[in-house]
Image (cartoon, rainbow, N blue to C red; front, side, top):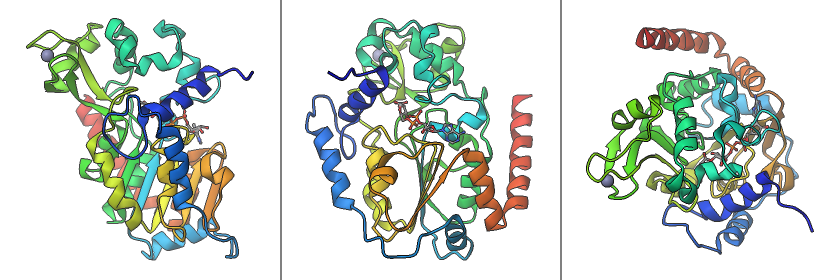
Length: 329
Ligand code: OAD
Ligand code: ZN
């Protein structure tokens, strides 16, 4: 019988844990796996008779503003250029390097049951991701430029590093689908706290506790068995309205996020930039898909060049880097 390796187990459990479409408690929803497979079918592909789209075509649609409602989906691969490891890359990914956290199996770091009796590994990871430890890279700033030009309808991120916020994209334009360190909730009384209330403890290697009931204070990162943030429901409006979908740096393994890649209309171009060919781009490509395999920075730089935005983006990065330098002094 085939063995479920840690990664496969994680993917499988993530499917059932993160559930199908939107929030609501996902614990015990056994229908989630088949529902998300079914959901893919609903959005299915169109014929392959049209001319193949290229990166240049996508750039042209953006440059001429033929597309003005761009939806972006991202994963950990866009933050590796900032120095943050992704989850599943063999060797360098977080799941291959959890020995230091002393946990029994990789996904335990995001499991409530494990957290309730040993929250330390999660808080060690939290300390590593402390705002200020890492900076946005060219990819985050490319999205910021899209926003500044009025072209970004919404950015859906699976990342919990908060770098989209740091790049200056307003929170109203973001859906942080797997949560954020910007706030925390007491695991006992469910009171909510701002991030200022827990970082000092985390940085001193102490587990932050609720000042009211002394329950463990858990940053609002989505764990297995927890509902997705309510804002995730925005997908119901955003994806049917999108006229271009950009997907970068994700293995498209975790549901319900992965299925969003199929939630745009069949005639809507999709640009997928990633090291590996995965998800529906591999098993159900559409005629207006553009797939750029390889390093994500290289592909984004190429797209920016085709758009004629290179100088503008450099200026933006210089300005924003100056602000961060000032903040960190
Ligand atoms: P993964 O680690 O599963 O996938 C990252 C993808 O990015 C892989 O396909 C890599 O090959 C690719 N990649 C990494 N660096 C790259 C680079 N420089 N250039 C091009 N491609 C690169 O990360 P996610 O898909 O984000 O959940 O994982 C989804 C969720 O799994 C995470 O949000 C996390 C985890 O469970 C939570 O944090 C709750
Ligand atoms: Zn409490």
